Figure (tube, rainbow, N blue to C red):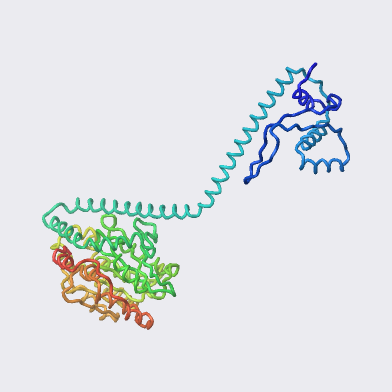
Amino acid sequence: MFRTPISRFATLFRNPNPHKLLPTEPIPIFTKKARIFGPKQKLKMPSQQILPITYHPPSSNPATTEKLLVKSEEDPSTRLLLYSHFEDEEKAAPLKPLLPKSASYTFNTSTTAAAAAAGSANNNQKRRRRTASDNSLYSSSSNSSSEEGAADRQSIAGDVEHAAAETYLITRLSLKLLSYLGVGYRWITRFLALGCYSFLLMPGFIQVGYYYFFSKQVRRGIVYGDQPRNRLDLYLPKNSDGPKPVIAFVTGGAWIIGYKAWGSLLGIQLSERDIIVACIDYRNFPQGTISDMVQDASQGISFVCNHIAEYGGDPDRVYVMGQSAGAHIGACSIVDQAIKELGEGESTSWSVSQIKAYFGLSGGYNLFNLVDHFHSRGLYRSIFLGIMEGEHSLQRFSPEVMIQDSNVRSAASLLPPIILFHGTADYSIPSDASKNFAETLRSLGVKAESILYEGKTHTDLFLQDPMRGGKDQMFEDLVAIIHEGDSEALAKDAVAPPRKRLVPEFMLKLAHKVSPF
């Protein structure tokens, strides 16, 4: 039967002993023009070159194999023959009868198709693995930056959520308070005045609020107790060389609208003078009464005394300060702690001896003298007595009266130095409240002083003057007392740049006139 060169070549690869079937004459193979792709290199071959392929019997001689390997690099036809020789050795297993031509064609076609499909699948799988590997490398390379961005976004989201929750709480408590107070002419005029006052100071509030929420020097919402609103904010100096003096600050708010963020302006400005400020939040009425407020403030002071070293503070230089209602709450905490330490078997988590001094700003310390005054200003007697837990508790929560009690008078010897700041034009709490309290303390042997500022209102010392910029007398007096005996700190204070203005002067003057406080 006549066989074409291609059929003879196929028989060569099917038969384990092809030398018996091959003809003696060479098989002509016609190839097309070949070209090797490279940098402008071509393999010059004739258009129809005839390559003779001659079969050589298998040889086990390594030298022969080595010669073939060398020759295969020079002659492509030898490489084809060499691979056939190796394949024959590997397939030296059991012989199988030859298939007919039609079956052989079908078998080869199906096998080739299956191999092609398997190769395509393997290629796809490798491509997927390569893509996954590239994606993994990309994700790992950008892992650190993405984690930092996610942490920042999570931190900002947490701050916003915390602020929203506390805003909702304050709003709900304010509405509940209004239901107690009723809507009267006096309260309507007070709220309108408060709205105008806040609008005039809004440029300063925006700047302070931006610093409060976005500065890295402010640590917000540090938990100091297990009661609602037992949180405090820390204002840390940028200079961290050595332990810093600390002020535990209790904010005001008529025992009703107090909030730790009200001390932001004071905290920012004192931190610029290397003083750490801890603004303590506490339960307000109607969420709590005066005993709850004093308990929260005392627990916040305890946290500062025992943990401030972790934040760079000096536990041997801790001061307590309060403003308005916060000044009253802070004074109650100090006197109550001294009385506890006087008693036997009373467990305490902090000591009055840890407090270097107490600063009261525009506070009231004798509630018997303030009940009628507050009633005339719109804080009605029934509400005020509800805050103070009844008329029978006025003595207990009047530091000026309590310290004169014969049973606890000896506790006065435990009190730290007390300095009281007050404006003479304060209509919310008259300046006589600070004067009388300082005189009473001095009569008991306590180192006490009242510093009065002529023509200053209830909010001038705390808001308008700090927003005015430049030199603030009350602020400078406070810093001088804290840095007393520290020559290096006093030298820095002498060359400290003036504080920048936050609100235009004409708006500050209008705010002074419309202030409801």
